[in-house]
Length: 230
Image 1 (cartoon, rainbow, N blue to C red):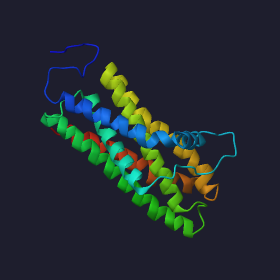
Image 2: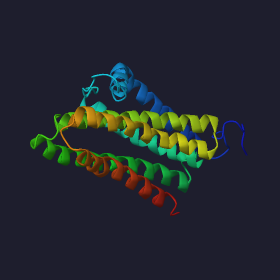
Image 3: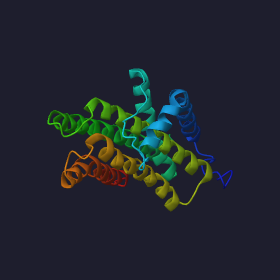
């Protein structure tokens, strides 16, 4: 029985408290870790969309290894909590809820690892051939920042879906708006900061397909296939 129809997560079902606890802990961790460097995060994200300026620097927060690990973990958990909220699985004691939580976190972690390996190997070769002007380590740092920002945005989507309960279509639109927003900024940053017109148009297109569009499309297809096999 739904206790409050406007708040879909408030149900008399065991395990709902665990979902809310995980959501609250994720929010608190983000506030503690991202909050002190919020200005740097805002500048980093804003620099991706300054199309009419000469701002081509790759800017990202410099944090400790421990904070980086914490942000990586909370970003993965945020993605999985978003999946649970969109699917309406607020009970983490049910098999479906735990499955979504595990699959979401594992998918986010695998996507991060694959992208980091691709960036390190491909950008390393391009840097040695002087095709790019930025050290691969700096672009990896920028990617870490984007992964954290994505996690924060997914967490916001989870909060909106959980507490406001929009229709499923709107929830999916909110979820897909996150990678669209990130990839739009990455497109400009690649062209303006990483390559600085040192490659041809086709070369840049191949790079986008190999390192941006293909991994994202493959991750979405695999995730959809795994989620609906049960």
